[in-house]
Amino acid sequence: MSYTIVDLILFEPLFDPSMRNGTAYFELHPNELPAENACWLPGSLFLRDAAFDFFAECFHGASDTFDYFSFVRFGANEIGRLLDELTAYLGSLSAGPSREQLFAKYVSIFGADIWSGVATQPLAEAVLGAGNNLREFVESKTKDSECLWILGM
Image 1: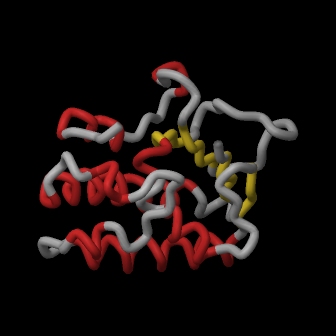
Image 2: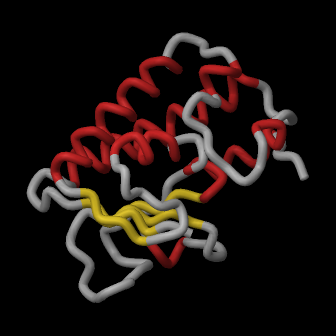
Image 3: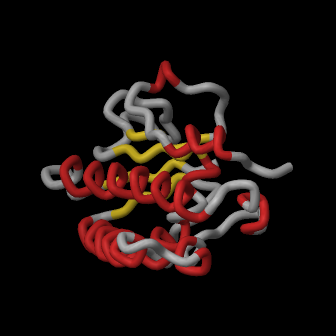
């Protein structure tokens, strides 16, 4: 399996749980969960796993307890570190990144070669677009709650 340019649609975040196609999403919820292990919640940002993989190391860097396959709560300190991680990563991509820079925060069960069918520039644009949406969502939606739930695979 190898992704192609048409697969860049995977980087478009969703804000309505009814728009999902399948279950291969990370859900970021900016408030306390209404019940243990609640998911597909209104007010969440949903990002396909293939896109989230480009930001996974930012989440690992922000919290020692982050788990790709679990529900993890970030408090104010972890949110601050996550925003710093995302800002630094996205800044490194803003001026025509190399392939190495693009995959600097990539963590996946699939190697980076799964994206070999997509040229660096369009892939970088998709990662930047998703990353900017992700950063803006975390920054704006967690100000009052000081809480972010990351609901993994």
